Image (cartoon, rainbow, N blue to C red):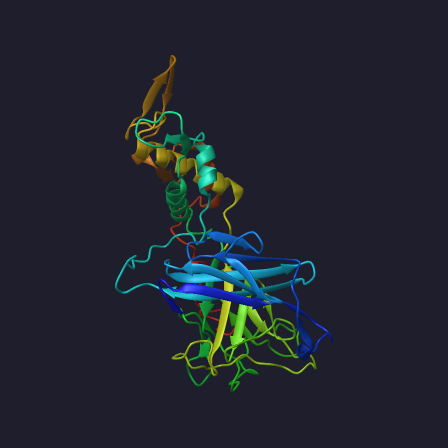
Length: 394
């Protein structure tokens, strides 16, 4: 973790193994090309290419550094360093920027919203007819595109809520699983519970999720990850050390992180307890970082771009915007009845009626019953196979 305003440095070393499989034979080697990709907490992606962008330097053979300068946006940052050509290799990592307690931006109240916008500024700009704005007082010749990003974000949030929070886009989360009682319950950091079975009972330093259906010889050791569907496991760390995927873990059913047998076929277990008062870089800790969430369908993205245009027109007084409450417009002898903006509603017989065809089509297909969020399931019967849980983004 780093304080707001820290000038952050990312350093990666590329090379080859003179003896395959022997890390002691590593020889630093320059790839033909090196690209750093950084994602900030707002989801914006920045790309830096060695030899093109001054932020990337090559101080010694195989060593590449990315210097971004002071970072002010608080939150979880991720990066990817990729070498191509002479060395084909990829490395990923992350860091957290803490908000300042003295200067802005202030920490605001949490508002549920999609992790990634349903449409971007370019989509909204095109849907609105590519509007432009003049630069400078009295200028009529120099123009530039209108910044539609705020309107795209507002439209994304609106459709996210109206569609029952089904499509959050790509979200990332780090959890610290552990057992909370001597019987070995697995409780994730946000309160999700997985029933323990450790060989159909207490498993000491590991737990088994009961996935025994007659196909396997023993139950599988699993962690149920909140947020469906899980798109990828980004990183698993035990005792502060990154655990590679091969012979260690796999993702099952887009939900479960399953412990795998080692290369000799010996069963392995995830830790059942850890030091939650320590950072996950320390011995005695266990952390899982993963990405989850569905992207909106194309129809939803197009609907968001259309709504972004309507919000822009309504807030800037554009010639296409109708006054609030207008229900009839006559142009060139043609009369069109329109629904008032405040008249958005959903009926049990006609479905959603917003007055915008593409928006109605999407909402009636994605959320015809007008649910306000993803449903929750509770099965009080077989506790070993079913349990109360939240699905998707909270």
